Image (cartoon, rainbow, N blue to C red):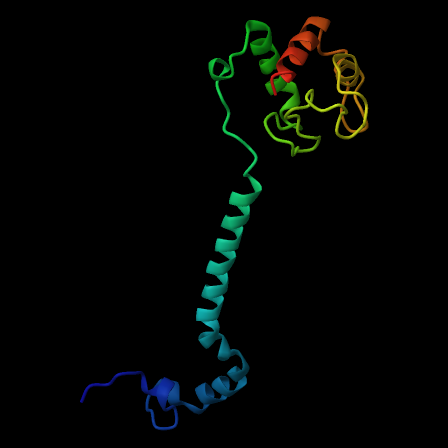
Amino acid sequence: MKRLAHPTICHPERSEGPLSSPRHLRLEEEFQPLLWLRSYRPVRNLFGSSLTLVLLALSIFTGCDVQRRKSDAELGLNPQQVAGRKIYDSHCDRCHEPYSTRGKKGPGLQGVFQRPYLPISGLPANDERVRDIIRLGRKEMPGYSQTLTQQYIQDLLAYMHTL
């Protein structure tokens, strides 16, 4: 006769062997409240896969306005703007997204000169005001007057006009 399941699991009162000892039955009674966890596994797996799908959907929808990085040639940048892009990548990109209105720590700079006012300060969006912010900094933004020369700042502004 073929057995389909372990006798202790299906019928502990009728089984024989080490798992039917009084000690084993006493342990099984003590841990009875935890045995429901065995049947909870499918629900937990369903929850885990649902959570994965939700996180995947959020990552897709939150990154919708961020574009892939284009090359200098695709953007049609002149040599001054290319130099400004390198400065932007090394100093500004850690806090400001260039091709998004969302920022990392600071505001995103997409279209910063197409708007009449700067996003956080409300100052006019022109070369003079942006140059001052780059040189002197703002609340959480460090100033770069000791790091960047006037020519580097001009190159950076030329690049920022292309965003």
